[in-house]
Length: 636
Ligand code: GDP
Ligand code: MG
Image (cartoon, rainbow, N blue to C red; front, top):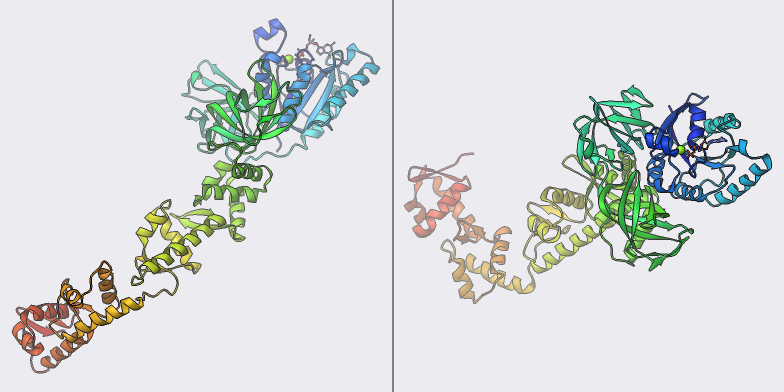
């Protein structure tokens, strides 16, 4: 099924409204003031059933220069434009201004109607045709058909309908699956019914009962009824003109220019980066920080233009620019916008949004320009890659579409392709698919090698870098859970090895320096020689004349590597001596079932001070078991 919206454009009084009436029978000049003054101020709406069966919505816009704002509101979502030029007057100022707007908005489908041909002769029509052809050169309508017609006599209308029917079928399909986006071009209240909003659904589809968010005011609302061309429907699709009833929303909570969206699907922004074009018809260069009227969809917002790569923008040229808005709006990548001078109010340019929500930039920054260049000319793959690189961290897959203004399925496809070719890495955190740019991953790998390697050199006796310390000192952007996932992937890639609570380089072994080795030998020998009456650690250190901070380090190393055995917090034994004590104990149990502390003292030829801790140690080793004040052998 195909839905399309056609919009009119052209100078005031050139016969747009009369043409729509002749085509549809609907008079779009609804307002009393319009009737009285004979000009269209507000947008008018009609629809037309084409011979092929397609029903197109029609937005009839005002042509008067004072109402360009309204024209812009109406022309935003259209698929095809009817540019009307009266035969008796030819191309006029608002013909040109509307054409500029059509061109800047990138509307490529259009038909030019030479209207009121009943007022002139054929030769005259030919001259007007020539004038129009010249005017269209270099614009998005350069190849548009030009059809002479008269609303009065009906001449040319059949050809117009046939051409329209053919062209509407060539209009590219809109995405009806993605998030819904409905720029509001009219707000009114119906007695006993509440607030009604109208607009052209730009993307997605809406259903009765759907919850949408009115932006930028963040008002949540549930759609009670939906109308398409005055008929109640349960569902409406991108490309249709719709009127929705939003109960509970007061009329002053919503205005033309607001946008109804699937909650959370577009960023609220006051700063956006763009390619900005200044019309060659602009009467002066655009200065940095110029204050302009920024038009996006049906919204008009005052804004400053920060030129990012030029001192000033000359007519006919374009630049990268940041639009700094004086009020919030929602925007998507690729949206077209228009700027008009503050006073006098005239269309001076427009462009395409490259970053819908951007940080403040310093001007003339090569890295900023490079990013914008990728955003402008890059493939979807490059765009997602660049976005991931800019975030510089893991990004959940469903957070990317909001930044890019794309459909989630498309983003998934792209992200997976990036991961497949090594340009991104994918990780699952909390059951959600995450991505990180390959470049970012490379810096994480390098940082990991560097800091863990340095740690090994600094603490040769340690097994590795304690995880939590490593995270908080060098990977503070990652929470503990994410960090563990990152570590697992790095280990999988062979960058590191995970051991208990520490991180080491692959194959790393704690190894003393030659100086440490000398000390170790002396300490171990002192313990070995002291048999079952070992000295305290402090006295060993003192006797050997060793002093210094790394002694705790040394102690940990000796205990961890089994060169000393910890019997309790204060008592260490040489392993050979522990082994001898165990053997003597076992031998004693060959002659008796139970041994007291006093007997153990005898067996080991040591004092109570050592015998008690040793027995407790063997208890903990499940060699002996305490029964009353005696020890028995554990049978196994
Ligand atoms: P709009 O401002 O472009 O919408 O122009 P309108 O449709 O309101 O028409 C402006 C005036 O031109 C009205 O007085 C119409 O009656 C007149 N007009 C419109 N179309 C024709 C036409 O085909 N032939 C003649 N003779 N007059 C027309
Ligand atoms: Mg009109």
